[in-house]
Length: 495
Image 1 (cartoon, rainbow, N blue to C red):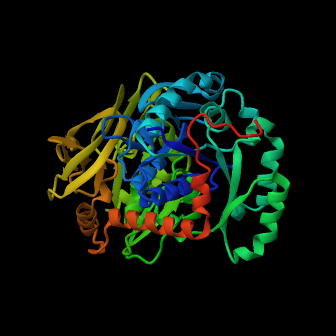
Image 2 (image 1 turned 60 degrees about the vertical axis):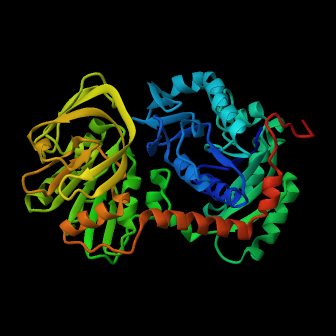
Image 3 (image 1 turned 120 degrees about the vertical axis):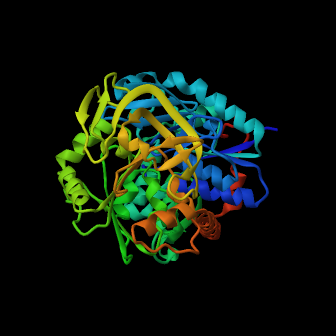
């Protein structure tokens, strides 16, 4: 069989493309279709490990869950993981290929189109429907040459496009109409309709706005989607979302986490943030870590040395060390674990810039970055309680030292992580551990926290996906959206 395909593009970043792709995937699955997500190119340090090896963007893993599928590298064949403002690691079909600066990548990204099409063709051969998510905006016409993420892909693959505008940002009429104005007419012809997302209030009040967009673009509106609260319970794709959800309040146990500049896989925090007994705060740059917190967590990073320097620039090193000396608890995950040690060396620049630096000295361990990148799902047990844990590894570097003799986990028969003699300072390479309900409850209990015994994180994600799908289906002409899907090679009548 050859799947039908439709593509969601946006007038800008963070307009809701990822979430709406997940919603349509769940709706299509409910309709009995075999559906798969696809994002030709993603840029994110939030990644997921695939069962058969390799990594993809975290958003595509969530979309796969909405489809009832395990993550697979074909869902996101090209992934860029920023290391500095001008350099990123290039991951193709799940494997890290090289680190390159933005100018070099932009000049050569067209070479990756064949790799993108390989994945796309495998998916269309295996499913009834493939829902494609664009990246950024097609209106960035300065990036159109050699584009593989938006209209470059849509034209090459022959895929109709639904354009999404975000009314919450303001100027949605101008952004939708303006996109048509700046696009090449052949690109604009690929758009067969639009959606207005994140509306607050009575949608009837925007009927004149919808009419104005339709008249000026010639595109039909498939719906005005309200602001859906279910999105707050789903993993965010990038740190932009953290600015809108900086703090949860009301819990007895206070946890703070500094927002590192290259923070990665920060959705490790989501299960903790959803615990009613936890007050969780993301600490913005320029702000001190509050003195009254019970636990400080350093999350992963795409550039450990770079973010260690950034941490020191904010003065957070003094806050963390003072907290630890006062008997407070500190947890480091992946790059955060490396920072807690005595020393970090990256002689070949495999994790960012070449160099070395002293760590925070809270764990008696040292880390040396290596060319091997460990990427795999993982099954583990808590070294203290034997609680079962399911997670994943995505890291470079090997960490050793006396405190590894007190590991956090037994990871597939091997020790992982380290703990201080008091047990108050902990580090691990295992991501996703807090998604395991029994371990999360026990870990919070050791810190004198009270976890909700009836809360299941996995069930909450499934429930949020269903709630999201309900909200989209109630406000969108989903029959019309799915009817716009075409088999690959489609061309608009005006082309």
